[in-house]
Length: 151
Image (cartoon, rainbow, N blue to C red; front, side, top):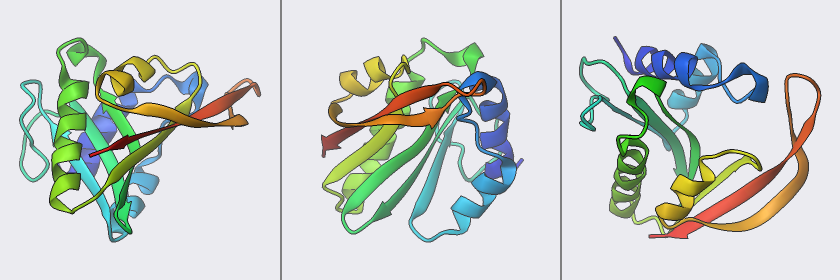
């Protein structure tokens, strides 16, 4: 199973369709072709399996440029939640960002996303909001919150 397959296996289970956050296989594959885009895939024990076979339990997709990193997507398979894997993924992302001499990591999420607790617990702070930025499957609108952390 390649990295795109591993990511898609987690994403299919982890993202609820109502929020419209799930990316397509093509979006994932295309993003990984862009210089500066990086994926980390871990198994249920929190070990990096990005470049080898294994059953994916979580992933983070990010993009770096000009001394900054943007966390694009992060997910943990529902069967593996509440085990600290989200925190593990963020710490791995921070470690790689430090190695690239990145100063800040940014992310954007919908305002009612429970992942805010994870981001805050791992050092992210809300720094901005975009009103009515996201559209739900039923046509509703949600604000986007931008978070950042210095590393």
